[in-house]
Amino acid sequence: MTPKQDQGILAKTWNLVKIVLKTGIGRYRKLHFYGKAFIWFLGFFYICFGAFIIVVTPARIAQFTYDQATKLSHLRFGWLVLAGIITLVSFPPLIGHTTIVTLCGFAYGMKGFPIAAVSSVFGSALVFVLLRLCFSHRIRQWSIDNKKWQALESVVQAKGLPLIILTRMSPFPPWVYSNTLFSSIEAVSLWQFMVATCFVFPKILLHVWLGTRMAALSDGETRGHMDTQTKILNGCLVGAGILVAIFSSWLVYTLVQKHIRELEGIPADIDELAAEAIEDFDENAPLLHRSFDEEER
Image (cartoon, rainbow, N blue to C red; front, top):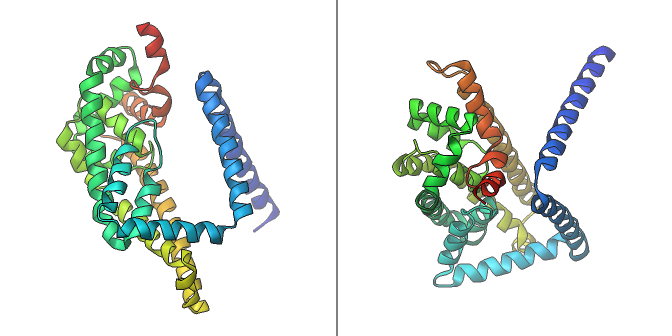
């Protein structure tokens, strides 16, 4: 590789970093006081959490987590606890769906997949129904003045279930906001939403499997019976699984955005607005949008 090529790659990387920073700062400035306070709280929390991990050591934390997960799996209704938490974190603005799904594998092995899958469908369907019943009037009023949202609704209505499935499989918006997204689009029916949610099962299966591998490495006694090659293999499997999850998420999101922008039979400007509506959903969602609350007051 020539020096000019190296400089070109560095320049592109730097431009990408600047775009990401500019976008992030722009979104931060648009947040209201509580949103900014929440960002600062998260930053403080993760700093404290990182310090906690360093002080306590990852091995002790992993062992404690393994012990608690084992106790939970031995409870008669331990699975119901995890199912209830998955249902709970399906409601905005809570987060942690992927973590709890991984914990299902951590506690129950691959038997945790049915727990995670069924409770994910149930939780998302419950969110869909409750938000649709409680905020249907609000959605209609808000969408009248939002061109991006009108474009998204028209595209979804025109293309139907296949597009709903693709968007549901996309990692962005995240799980909880994806639930809110589809409940906000009147063109999406409950049965379509539930069918689309079933297409997330491969991702759930992957995270459950990652949980099983992490559990094998978390217990000191189990690790003690492993030879070095087995430990390395399990570590590599966990790392590879995480990389697969990241790459597949990026690939699906890229394909979804490209597909929306190139839909046949839909004007290009409508395609672009629909794609932007998904990208900016966290800022413009009708059920989360603060300006709508101000207008109602």
